[in-house]
Length: 313
View 1 (cartoon, rainbow, N blue to C red):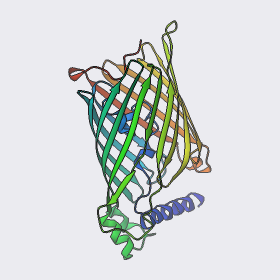
View 2: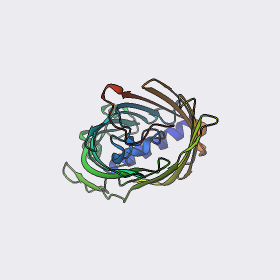
View 3: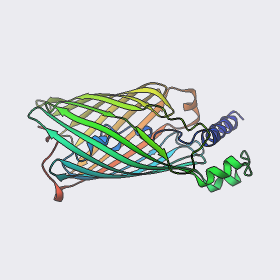
View 4: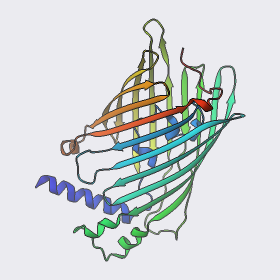
């Protein structure tokens, strides 16, 4: 009975999101493995790997719970030469009855000095939120409600996001993203609480190389204030072994989203595979099996250009 009440409240929460806010959160929130591929959240990292790379990301939050959030992301980015990077990204996210799709094009320009390499990026984004047609079968939803019918058609937005991503002295990484700094609703403007909050993602990291043990440690911190998502801080520690052919890591999140995450991964030639598992400190954790995330990346070596971020020693 208690589980059914939790499900009812979850459905009411989703419905309130749908009819009460045109934008319910920024899509960059769904990732926990962004520190592996910063291009997922930061347009300034476009082309920063020095390769033309393809990335696939899948995340299932609150696994085993009915209608839990599931996200699919496909990304491509590469260095076009002359310090210019180009990328594209597609996102499909579903949380109960609420669906989000996103298409993004990003560009970057890199300034290179003997000690500092920094990319300045800009992303243009199309985002659409809409209610699944299967919601008509949900007994908790009034299918004749004009607001519900309006959300079946969805709301579309055009965003512009700037970002900076850099590496100092081959060891200190840093970045700043201003998600949706400029945002415009493409449909008839909604009167249902379409206010947008100021959002940012700020990160710092440090690379420690132990040549004696062939281990690379990379602690990092990400501070995230995103649209309709309370402030939270991710503290990451990633370790690479055997020339980073094996990877392990741990993440602890502070703030509104308190969770502990674990990471394992491997690299075979140009193919990278990572799996992450997260558990939350909130009571709702007892109703699900945690969160699972998979990231697969492939570097297209045939198009390799001069690297913005040097190879590990």
